[in-house]
Length: 399
Ligand code: W6P
Image 1: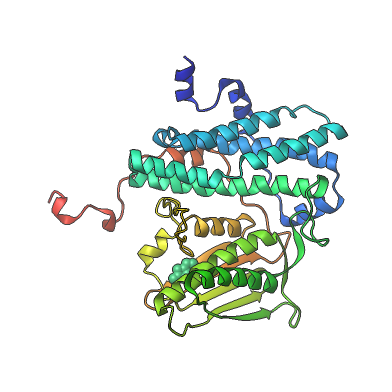
Image 2: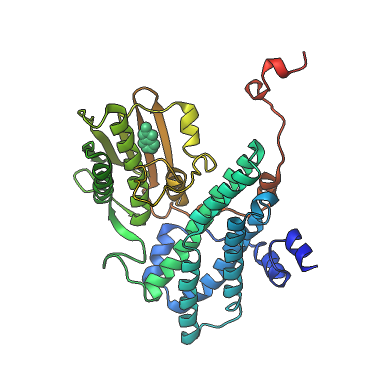
């Protein structure tokens, strides 16, 4: 009986009702300005009252989507583990459902958040392990691959948002220390983009030098179209921007060195940072030989990018290209309504363009909502081809 229920629903029936309840609410999307304002003038109590509800809503929304994953994926031990972590955290937070905002309760809540953050720290690697298990045991058809791609984009952006809420609360109202006195939680109200870009370049160059004993130089151009002659700053989460830039530099460096050769003169990586009225744009241009559009598409595909982890026996991991660096970087960019595009010219080089909202009231969180439409996308079977190039090859078609 217990076993049957587990097969029908991945979540124990004791919390199924609560899950059903909280997943009927849409997550509240906050702007980066609202995070900033609340960090400056909110209180630990009001933050607690908001968070205990909002975390349950965001967890419930994504847990409903987890339960719609292909059953053969949910049976894999690693995917099972991830699903159980979400279940445990949902249950942990339910303990505060009706608690009022006494100081000792808020303190216990903060400790609970630390436990949850730690529990979920290896979700990305564990989920990737689940995909490897699936590929090795069942194989993956095109339809499930599309479903998995759709799910993981939503799952990881939901995770980014839940960690943002928790971190922000713990830095502002808990005992986690801010990165600098200027920071409001994990937000820098005057994040200097040139500094973040330069740090990311230097750290990628360090890895590149260690791996290839050479590295391309960077030429950085900044253009502030709004306040000419002033440095370009944005209200942002610097760790997110750094993560994106570091990933793009590693890829650009690897392509440059591999295309030209370690003993050859290397073309510079050109970086343009431009601040306009609405958008902050960063373009990283390499002359690393580019990639075809077929390969470009695969760079954002979780299934294609799922390689077994590199051996830890002293054999070096490659500088870039194995893992979820690019799809996750695009989610970090999209999270506050930015984006990331790769434009490549095969035989020549690649431009990586990152856009962030320059106006903090316009930078709202992009959050997945569990709905009839997401349900359909997650459970859709194989679709009939409606373009000629998707048809099976001529020889195998009835005439
Ligand atoms: C390449 C492939 C790539 C991905 C991301 C960023 C830059 C580059 N360059 O050749």
